[in-house]
Image (cartoon, rainbow, N blue to C red; front, side, top):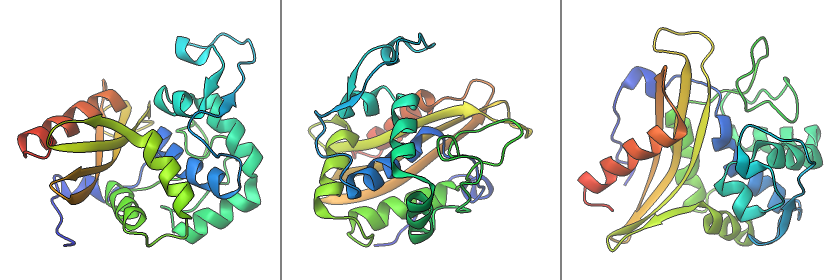
Length: 222
């Protein structure tokens, strides 16, 4: 219907680093390059380096790596895709400011002193809407693969598909952290693309997911 519901007009059009929500597009681009074929494929081989998130300190399938948002796993994928092919897709999608110059394996992450790619909540939601309406140049097999690992919750009323993102917010009056939750809801045979962005000292993807889920429950979609 193209109907929009917007809270905080100014923030909804402000571009910020997408953090781990970029894993949605990293996955699709990897699938189009035949690097990803199944949610259960062996995807990440732990290098033995102990990282702050215990779930990352093990070998992971694609589905598991996506679920625990394993940054090094998707950095490896981005390096396999390569700068030239990644830039082609970023341009094709018209993704945010389209700037990946800070590096092939970190351009979506907030980095102090570096210029990372930036995108607004409205742009995030618009891209998801185009994706599930079949308006983007991804194959059916690639989108089906993504949707399998993107499913986050299912109730009698609907299904929630989404990806969190968290990171430091370097500058700004609203606080020191970014929290994203981006995806879509399938309910009553209708689909609703969404993007939730939180800026505060305690912001996180988990917080954005909780806020989004509560909104959808209050609205009778979940």
